[in-house]
Image (cartoon, rainbow, N blue to C red; front, side, top):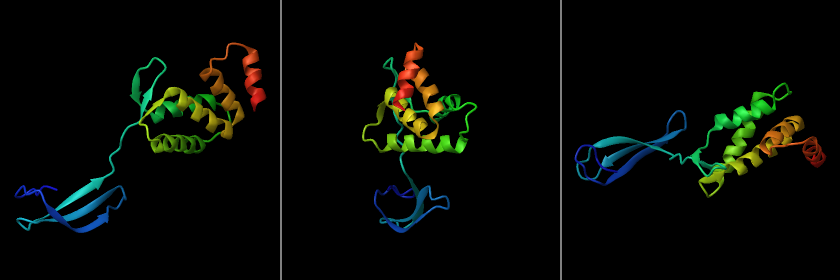
Length: 147
């Protein structure tokens, strides 16, 4: 860490503790050359998840888009917003824990369907009908028989 006073590139850590929100680490440092003390804050680097869409374009994962899609599928169903937020958090954790920072929209759709199947079967069928582009009643019947 470069000293803000003399520019020397080495310092030693005197004290280290989490901030009040536990979002960052506060480090008190002392420059080895000039002896002056200064404070730094360390945060986790947030590496975004990139979604590869069906048309091969790429965009940053948007939690709001997932929530909106799930809300539409759950319309007039006994599903709470907390249930959906929890499911989205689990989906996001699954994506963050993957080694690859790029994920296809198909994979995200599959994860959403898995969660909706656990939460509400009607919402699952609604989402699947749009996601899988059902074109006939037999497609619905086939999907329902899988439940």
